[in-house]
Image (cartoon, rainbow, N blue to C red; front, side, top):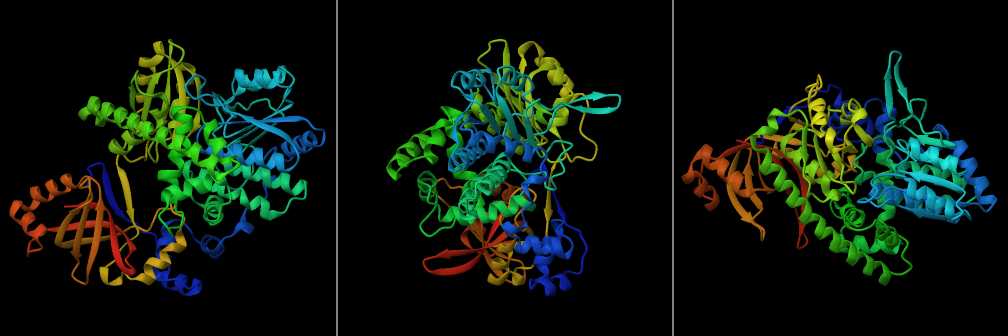
Length: 590
């Protein structure tokens, strides 16, 4: 068991038998749903059986009608429209959705993307001046723009019409009367985080908002719903990769979008899926998050995200495959750069990490594009918010990314240092920032000075849905838990636990010796289990508790006294035409 984590059994109360009977599910599944805060007949029904029809009207968003009217008039008057996207997965998916929708409605539309290394995040002066020189009439941002106060002002001074669509937090100034929110003076600002926006669901990603804009455009131009739904696959990919809450509308967008993704006709997406899926395997949140997303991101991180856009706008499978080869090469380079950065940070931190409330590391030679990934990895190791900074194109400045833990709003904390920053934007769990080198020490001091937020845990809280004996684990239960898919942030996979389980036999598998296969007995039933990770460390822990002889017997399948507590997710393992229950272990306790 990681010393940075603690286990808790969920203690939410309800009549699980009655809920199960009413909705035709088991009491165990009723407990799992209740643990996720899904309470009341309407909410449970939507959670289990919600469809596209349960999505809210886009016009509930502040300025949506205003923005759509500008776009519709612009299309009818043959005005040139340029989409300005971010360079990550959400930005690329948002850009693809909007450019595709605008062109389908007859617009003269194209797109521009900031260069990650030389320009950083969001709309900038180069993009604006190029748009003016190219005769662009309307700039439409996606997944960026809410923090671009000066940039929007410049665009307006040059005579451009500007529509901001974003999902990031609105910056503000502290005043005696409370926060004074700073909103760009664009012709329309569509952002669900605006304090004056009454849209009921506040967790959409940038592509979710782009999809809502496309929905309005298709309705205005009489385009069939079936064509609109094809765009949902791109919103689903962005929703997973941007790690927004997989609840409410996001859950519906992801679930329905993955159905479309499985049958995608987009050459680039089809090529991506065929590279990452085994024959007959259906797309999953895991595959999107751990393969598709990093490959799409690799272009923007190591070269240019224009590559990813070219992939999805490919006119043939051969063209898509050639672009994909290039992206995968960049992704391999990104992996190496990430490993180097994380290794350096961890080696420098040592035991000092636990003394910091916010870990802030300036690594001059860290590849700027992997700063956020490295921050996320280090955050997972130490369960602390992490900011990784590196050199920027301006020799006097440094820039980087922040990643945080549940309960610690990194956006709010960085807002207290806003006067030290050249640029800044983000949300409670992640942010990007730029500051002058001379401000670094003061930034570190002020970020750590307030201490740890009240009520936030300094450890990873693992909430267990139920302690379920092995005898209750069967294919019906495993198949039934699929009803809570797609799982991700705020809608985790079912987490079960078992105490004092006997390890009858152990085997080390995999070419990298990073798979531990176990035969476990909890006193009711014996089941197979699998664990992926640092096998050597697990074996060391067992030896420290039980001794070399017991471990030797365990690996030989002989009688032994090795016992463990486990957290696990039950699955059905299909191999050579046979199916059997297998437990995927996520954590041990000795």
